[in-house]
Image (cartoon, rainbow, N blue to C red; front, side, top):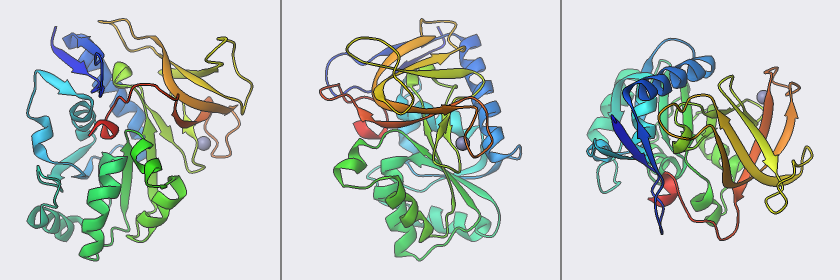
Length: 270
Ligand SMILES: [Zn+2]
């Protein structure tokens, strides 16, 4: 065993995922491969909407830390925009902006962290990042409580001139095989994973556009049982091979969590 991941449930048992070296390496490799499709091959300067301390415990990684570490491979010269108390690390942020503002750069963060902590800092100092690509994930539940949906999220980013925005969806149990949002706002299944939607009570497959529980498939797990997982997330299959963006495969949307399901995951558990 090389590393243990845990999804940070707010009650009950967090799930624990045991990785050996080979499986961990495979996850990193596939994550990079999937993301290169969306970001291009060059490693861009990376602004992280979190603090460095979240990475400190290397033995028992939280989902948040695993996400940050996984995505850090995609960028270079990482800058943590926040301090441990979630206030802005202003000197670090300003130094990063001064250096990279006029070139393509990558922003990575959990959706709630971006909204609640990074965007206010960018707004307070009137920072515009017209060449930035934002990659964000980790759940909408906290933002839904604030009545913030995807259009409202993108509109506020537009105020900072950030136009290229990709939400991603995935499970810590299937780290590496992530589903990324295209220009049409649809989450796409990559080559290494797939999705089905099932009636949560009867188990039958839902029709296109019908709401049900998401069942996720990944070819990656080799040191723990995680190839097929029925999630507690609700979603809809929107189509297959016919997204207007031109990408093939199934595409879908996530609508939230089945009522009464335990809160798990990344920024929702912060
Ligand atoms: Zn698409």
